[in-house]
Amino acid sequence: ILHERGTTFARRMGIAARFLGSFGSTLAARVRRGPRLPSWSLFFETSIEFLRRTARVASGRPPLEQRAIWAELKPPPSPSAKEVRRTPVDAGGVRGEWVEPREGHSGAVVLFLHGGSFIYGSLVSHGEMIERIALASGARVLALDYRLAPEHVFPTAIDDVVTAYGWLRAQAVAPAKVVLAGDSAGGNLAVTALLRLRERGEPMPAGSVPICPWVDLTRTGGSLVAHERYDWGFVDDFPRWAETYAPGVDHRGPLVSPLFADLAGLCPLSVLYGEREMLFDQVTDFVARAKAAGVDVTAEVYPDMVHNWLTLPRFTPQAGRAYERIGAFVRRVTGT
Image 1: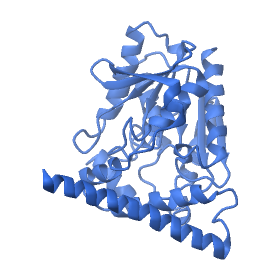
Image 2: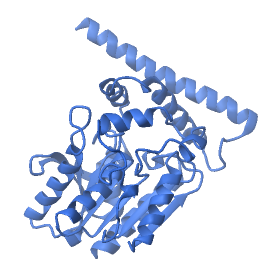
Image 3: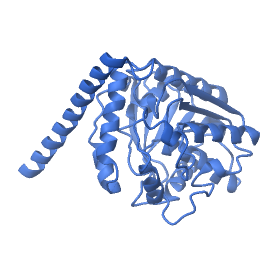
Image 4: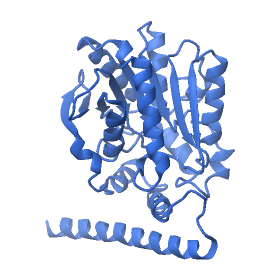
């Protein structure tokens, strides 16, 4: 017990040291050259540096160690937490949580899929994002705790999403009232689940919101390299994550990398991503392919923003604007 307590204390001290180091180096750099990008506040830039240092600690380690490192970052209580009600749920055998505004909901449902490279992330790490989507849209959010790699590899996560969607239908929730949403790896799942539904001839949901979606697991160059200096990930990790998620599988397959899929017949999409994120060019290519396939696509690029800037709503007004756009899209496609 004493050893465990000592290890926990050491980890917390490590996190504190990383944050203080991030703040100090960011402050010093801003004194010399100003903000790294024009719209970055001091605390937004510090947060990006802190995430980058954490990603460096996790980089190259075994998947379960990476998961543990990211899980140690306990987000502070969010102002939105008091405005929602959270209830555990079994969605057809898939664990999840209902998150709904305390003042009532519209009847629409957002099926939300968290990011984390298919190997980490949780309903805790994405708690504030989930809460803010519920409040912005007025909808209930079914936040899915889908199974992660390496214990559960492709296509398990997609199967979990499709199962939860079927469970919603069995609860008399009409597809026209459902929106699939997710960030990063969850954005991938928000699209690949649509492809699986189309394969099976099942009705599409009203819409989908891929946020900074990782849509090309084969990509190695372009903005993945050029934007690394702004973003908080590292190029070398992407092939490792891809192989952990889909070992021995062709990563150009449409259910692994939906960039290469025939996208015709999908429901309306609202795609949000950052101008400076490492996934910038692949998301841009995906939007172009979806439009060429006749899909109703609304794409918004946020100036100066990096991957998943929505997780830092207290440090940049662009996060608030993104949640407003998500809420407006959900209300429009569901008629609520």
